[in-house]
Image 1 (cartoon, each protein chain N blue to C red):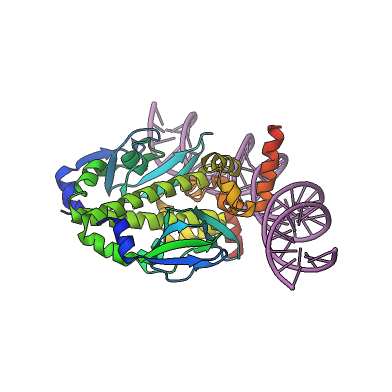
Image 2: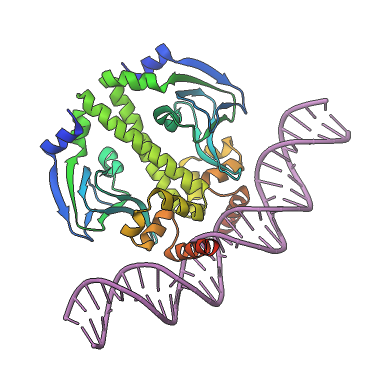
Length: 178
Length: 178
DNA sequence: AATCAGCATTAACCTGGGTTAACACCGATG
DNA sequence: CATCGGTGTTAACCCAGGTTAATGCTGATT
């Protein structure tokens, strides 16, 4: 069986308006979400109430809190719709259990996990090794569309800085390339 | 088949002296390493020559560059022995290919990947949301042994700061708890 | 049209951490 | 024993980014 078929058979379609949460940090939410349409942001709230963006989600991507799905802990982040969105959700355990017997499913899931792990390693490198300005330039090069879809505040929070700092960086850069 | 058996059958034992590299950033190294004894550090070198520590490895942990193993790109980090170490290595492709047919192997690998993904999400959260001082206190709480095994410089580079900054943080903290 | 909320920009000020360098300490090596 | 390299501490200086706040813009609501 393919994940696509599983999603078709057992998935339930859910829709959210702009500004609605799919789940919130602290919830127990043991679903995987396959994004059909819309644009979402996954974000953390730190103890002092500041927001940091974990990732942006566009159609065809998959998301879910592995901590909640696999470890039965609370979600460590919130998932918010930046525009009207429709997703298909399936219980993670369903996929996980079926993959215990279904090799096709297991391999497909494995592929997703490997891609995820590589993406996260890249992010770790960037946060650890690159200064904010370079992270900004790299983001611009890799996801130029993003800058039309989200506010500068969210971009900044994705880069790990404040909107004020991002504004300064932009000014610095444009000064050099007149 | 279990991974343990696979490692026993097809693994080759390799030993390194303190200070030796298992592989270096930029290499192609498509092996998974199962650490039998010793203590290692995985680290990044940024373009300006500064070092940042990705993780520390102790016996029973597994490491390898997924980027190199799965994407056939170059390793994005180096693996260095902080003390005499012995590892068992197997080609990643061997495990990956066998897991295409062997459901037990696939599930075990899946479990490793899920654990890895959760660990990386935690690290992302910490780097993004916690100030250096709190990351230090958390590390102290979670891995107290570490402080006897590695230099303060390496701890600092793991936290994403310099040894000088770490020295200051320690001083600040001890001043408050006399 | 008037109001209001959220966003981006800019300035002023502050702080945490980077940089450099001096110094002391220790273990290894000659 | 003397020396040397690596390590940790401390101080002085600097800068990137955080904080706060004022300003202007835009788009939504009434």
